[in-house]
Amino acid sequence: MGQYLSSNDEDAVTNETSTSTPNIRVVCISDTHGDHENEALDMPAGDVLIHAGDFTSFSKLEQAVKFNEWLGEAKVSKGYQHIIVINGNHESNADWKQRTPEILSNATAFLKDDQVEVSVEGKGSLTIHGTQFYWPMQTPNPHYDLIGSDVDVLVCHGPCKGLVDGGRGCKMLRKKALELPKLQLCVSGHIHGAYGVVKEGGKTFVNAANCGSGRKITKPAIKVEVVGRKA
Figure 1: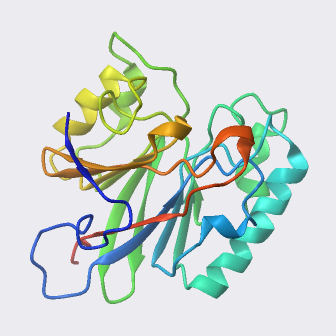
Figure 2 (figure 1 turned 90 degrees about the vertical axis):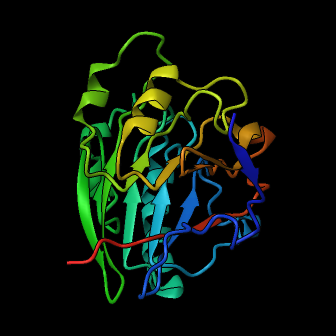
């Protein structure tokens, strides 16, 4: 079911590929539910910040606006060159969901079944794909066919089956993730009690759900390293 690693062991979650240039530091958070200013989140510096959805509780617009303001502050204080956000189930039915990219103006990209290539100065580039929120599937999900074979980082609110999922992940997502030839990192959340890091098939899977019960943050951000693609 995968090799579990300590979420605080930075060496353990570093991609093992040898490289002559520094690796890209990716900070992973999820399920902050409007509690993003809680000191327990303990945000480290990094190159890329990824939020894997549920940045609000029950689609509250004021929380989305405040979250965006916080992203802008974090970008400056922690040195993030890029910020990637996807929606979770708490945002998927928001009456403002069509305006999410506009509301999250401090993010590099809000991804919803699409991808973006980001470049980190002196460290190379990454192709990142973010999915819409989907409940676990036992049969093929055609939306996963949109995930390109060149993806380095996959962001999905719900986790893969058997990989930091608390037994509640998606079988079809796991199949797709393990088939991706260049995938280094898969970031998810949703299942609060499954927070942690695991390796499977040479890939790192992170459940970054920071909230415990009551939608209050009890767990810190997780930082991993991946190898940038050289020009």
